[in-house]
Length: 348
Image 1 (tube, helix red, strand yellow):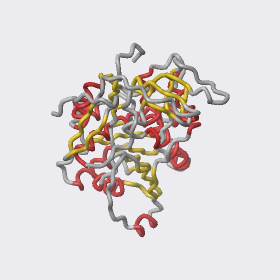
Image 2: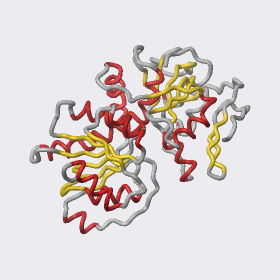
Image 3: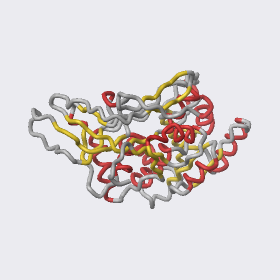
Image 4: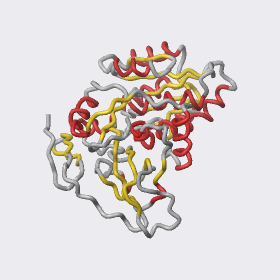
């Protein structure tokens, strides 16, 4: 396993050489300048996303190596008009391309302060770090599915929803489904499918109706038959965070008439779909929209008030990032992993 290397540029880099993921963290405090009209953020926690581990096997860029961060305002530009930010404020950042590759830096210059969101004092910074990426994605996925689910619930006694992938995104989606669809809505059943038993058991603890083991060594026909049997019928909505050729084909095989597939994750899969069959069955495929700033603000309040509980997570020092990504790749960590940056005394 790659060893941690100390750099002089005060940042952690993801070096993708020969398909290996190596994290490097500096111990030298080299503070960047405050951008004009912006602010300088001291990063305290960063989400270690499961898609980071896919870099090792798939060779493509993860979705948010820097999107999931929380920290404190370190300095604010004097020229910032009508500023309501002050040093020491606890914040998160709305996902943006500007910060996409910068979240593992100890200091992060932010030129557009509209991307900065203050978090309540009762919210853990470790929990807050997970909200802009995984939390907002799960929130957006369920919001996208909700109108279709409610429409089908008017004419069907039971609406079956399947979440493909029991990693961080899947666990957040279960929490959002409970909140947005209502925990007492008994005619909506949310299932979770995954190839890993430990992740499925974690999902079961997060309130899904049932779990389905998609053993990759089994025949595709058998997997589809077991899925239909477990759901006591086909599926009405599939939220696929894996979006591989195999998971998409399975979803199409078990999708009911007027069913909806919502595609997420970081897959670069290409596949052929029979549009005539899709049209004849009045089925549709769509993507998870990027959550809006307003939705992020709503989600922060929901988590802070306890209306939405965060998924299971563990905090690791950023110096252990290589091991964390390795463990995520091999599914030795279930739930979410959060990295702590620096010798901070802030909460978990």
